[in-house]
Image 1 (spheres, helix red, strand yellow):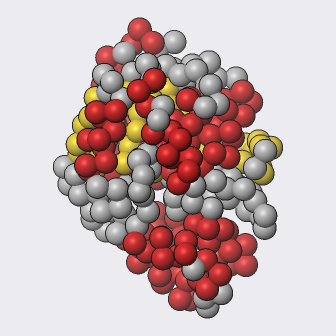
Image 2: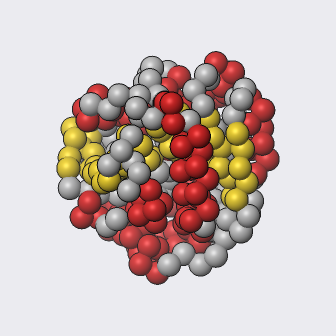
Length: 279
């Protein structure tokens, strides 16, 4: 999958969203987190597109989607945009997969925006308070200072931060694709805008609702995740009755990048085991 696959645009309540779809089969919607884009799913999409119709998008304020001053880029807005996207594309009970912020967006879309799903998959998710790396919380508290950094320092700091999301070096082409949307007169302020709008109240609200989830739920977590400790996945597994937890060895926060083959195998086999819902 390349940026060329994001060939379609949708006008959402939070700005225009770039999206695409490949493959054939049951509808599977992949949602990235922060500060990433749909590009993180490339290797997983390559492995599963022969069995699923895979939909992917860049969230508002991210990747190739709209970025503008005053834009709302909170978790609750992402959940709302997911509902709008599902309605726009005409998806009926899709399988939703969310990573990092995308996990909270997926859960919010289902639990608060009432999006009907066939299943939920949570990967290294921002799902339980407190959350946020030491660096991102420092930025959150001092957004105005960081926004004024010289561009070369901003780029270097962000590159160093991204490198800690993976258990092994991120491929150079992928790292560049993840960095580029956050660089320049539009990208740099957009990066700090989304950090400034970290929405802990929304995840606190979601926490009270996890016991209501009845959809089959898979939790995938990198054993070496330095952004969201594996204990978060274990706690979520206890809160969502009947959920299944799979810990991915040799994977960090970007588990789908560190071990895409294992990630895709767990996801594909689990979805196949719920084939009665694959419709």
